[in-house]
Length: 393
Image 1: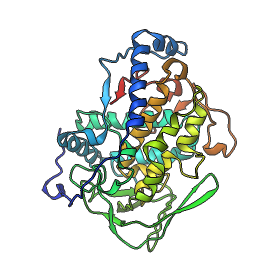
Image 2: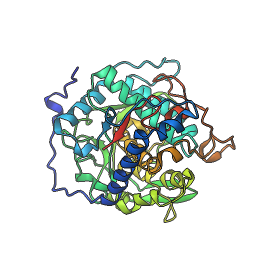
Image 3: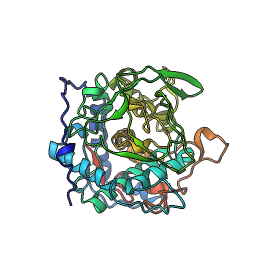
Image 4: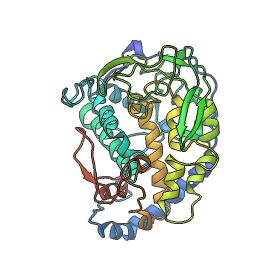
């Protein structure tokens, strides 16, 4: 099946010259991780380690599917991905209306699941595994329900760190993931992390996204905890209520140039031990140079509504590319020592351990709402084990 964009959506912006930044350092880490993973699969050491916790590994490197960087896709491959995402936005929701009154589409089902579990899947011991499974269920829906032939692409954020607005991810062309919002007056955006307040300076956008393939989409479920402050604010409705509105963005080179560079991303891999806690902290919680971590910097690259709402953030289609990049970063860290790092988890079951809760365990069930069956955390620790068979290019 091919869901056509239609002539009205094949909008090409006047794209300024764009030069991607070098990602040589992190690409070298990715290459090393792939080589180490290949050896661990070939000699059986990873399979043996996964089996100690009852996780199967039938996947081999030659038969693994490849998740690609979005900018490396051909125009036809980008359009196929966009078509499938838009297809989900036309299919009816499978979430019962009494559970989520605001859900209208299959795409909304994923937003609702993320909303419902936000405080149990961020800054927790299951952050990485839950979001890996979430991406997989989304990818599966694209393929099984909308005929997508490819796999979930990712955003290598360091490539666009100096010029996200003119990058192939956000330049507003028909093959991008939509452009900036039209200019509309707005305040700086409060950014709160680790009890440190920061306000992102207003950029060139702020209003509705009108360029690219998502210029006509509607965010159906009402805002929950918006940080974006346009004139008049963002209306917050009762949780899960119907609050249709346009997609708004204010893409921030100020954010990307400081916290999403290749040098900054390399800090994720500086810890020489097999302890995942330092990796997770720099990724999603604490950074020694300031309050912004890689994960939050990714979300606040486009800011706006619903992108800047931690609950509703999947309502912006850039969410999936950004979390593809997060999963790739974890894949890179894991596969520097695949067997030793396979079952490494750290953290509790509640956001920032508030309220205090027990540590996450490998037997904890990952909840996908109406999008997939609950599954033990241990099944999601390897991209070549359990239900998975993919690698990153």
